[in-house]
Length: 361
Ligand code: NAD
Ligand code: ZN
Image 1 (cartoon, helix red, strand yellow):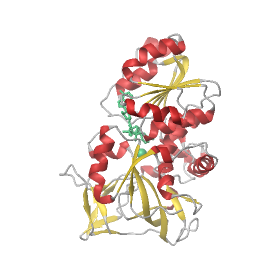
Image 2: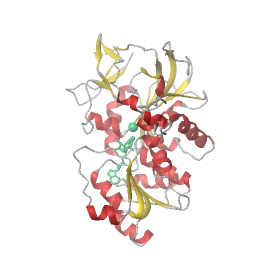
Image 3: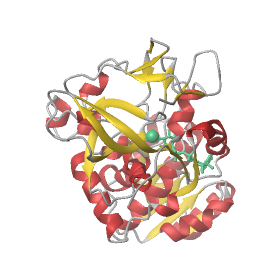
Image 4: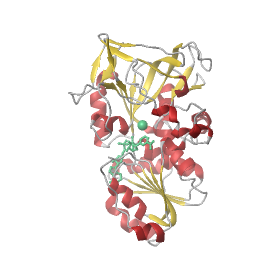
């Protein structure tokens, strides 16, 4: 079958047709991948922002159809349509039972080796390894969905939409009538804007240097969209300089985290959603952390409980409150994946989706 391999000595992904999926374990599921979105995090592994073992298969925002299940799997059967969670939940570890399944400890286990090229194992996958026609994932990572849900839209729920909507609802806990600023209008930020709207925010400011995305942000729920250069004037105009109740950083930059903290009102909440470099230091003074009484928190995978939240997100899509179609800017075949990565790197797109099979429905 075909898959895109990231070798350690090559910058580009190598799309080849001599890849095999191997080693279906008792609690594993083999899937036909139908569609996989490209998340900025895939790019961050490719360009070294996130250190990761290579060679590897990238891709972690996927939906597909179950082909085969291990002997110990009875939650799904062949033919089931599923969304693949970028963070599985085992439901049994201390964090899962404490209500923090997005921090599931089973994820800390070594990455299984489920791909082979010419008989040699590919040692790493990042996420699930969904830039492949088939993949093997833990049964803890798949959530069945109704067969009428188009899988090219459904895949977005697997990472970007869960992360953005979840950051607004689960992590920030945005209150009705509040004011929100969202930095970064990629798949994650556009989902955060929708999450803020769904939570009942009264005022939602979107910030991104790509002005071409501003109209789409307004369509998805932002009351106003500006470039970073216009931010200071906008904070003064909208909040009298006091700042927003909530600021969500969906870029992955220390400098933007600092801007988001500064754009938060005293006593408000700043949520770090973007994944930055480990050496990108954000300066905070000891005094301001006390005096501002701001809550600064991270948000890993939107605080997801995948079995609760995927169902909620599908229901919100069905009733027209969550727009998934608008999030897809462009579709590519697996052969075109390097061109798709360039589009993601340019910041022009919201989501680019790799279509591996007809989406159905
Ligand atoms: P993306 O590349 O699609 O979008 C990023 C956007 O940020 C672009 O529109 C870009 O123009 C904008 N941007 C760049 N500089 C900016 C600035 N100074 N101010 C405001 N906007 C700016 O990325 P994405 O896929 O939406 O992911 C966003 C971030 O979230 C990435 O860092 C990604 O790794 C991270 N992420 C985090 C989680 C999580 O669990 N917390 C999950 C998925 C993705
Ligand atoms: Zn992601």
